[in-house]
Image 1 (tube, rainbow, N blue to C red):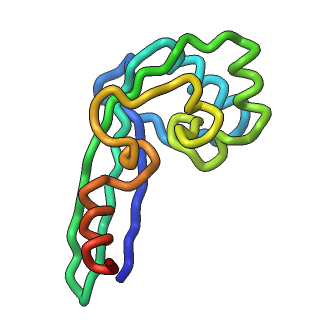
Image 2 (image 1 turned 45 degrees about the horizontal axis):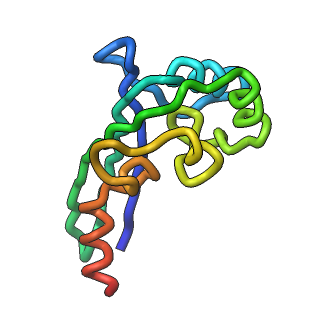
Length: 125
């Protein structure tokens, strides 16, 4: 069994633009500032290889983020929880205090489409 996953966000300002993972702390702060006080879609995709056959899954969830005061934004960036995270935040980390899933499943926001996780669980029990 092999599973590959990745996550991106839809830019709330540009319908056809995506937000990936920040390259450094300044980039993370810019992303968080852009998302602050807004709703955005988080898209996760997975490929699951079982016995030589690939299955693909794509899901999205809608996240609503509180308005982040500058002090909070700085704290979020300084704790490095943005590293390797689409949009520069980890919903299971400190950002969980300031953002919530309002439509869809939290596993999608954390990086694995729920349907892919359900299929994997049914295989491995």
